[in-house]
Image 1 (cartoon, rainbow, N blue to C red):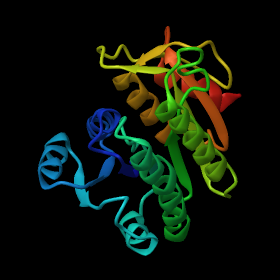
Image 2: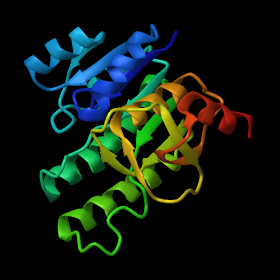
Image 3: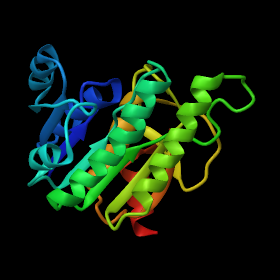
Image 4: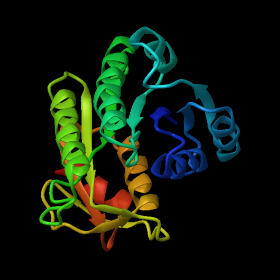
Length: 218
């Protein structure tokens, strides 16, 4: 089984991911800021790791990641404003990428944003900044020599997961439960041959593991 270091483990996708990985006997290292989050993540099956993306440094984070088989970055500002978005989705991602390279962790999975999200909906300056920062983060990761995957889910929902998705390099825009984003990340952890690619993701008819296995064969 793999050791997976999750940045953003206390978030909505992150908690689903912790639980699903632990249920499949993977070792989960869960980065979090607050003490109560550590307790909750431990209850879900993770080993809590205390850290704050806006306050840590590359050497500290690399030390915490060292020995992991993969890093999953699913941290986000969650609508907390432009400055927080820039700090977490932007500089935080760059810090995590640099730390993974320093720690010798080759595999890096990034939860990004679907290009069509919010198009023609007048989402405002904050959302436009969010999409700009997300694209810059994608570019930063894709320029590295890591075995990266950029996952671009459609509009996230808290609907119960079905475990069934549509996944590919270019698909029609749609919604997806957060639990099914997590299921797809688990499948990517378990199919390391899927690498250096961008995958768009929505709800669909194919089991997540099967959808990722097909991409692995391709």
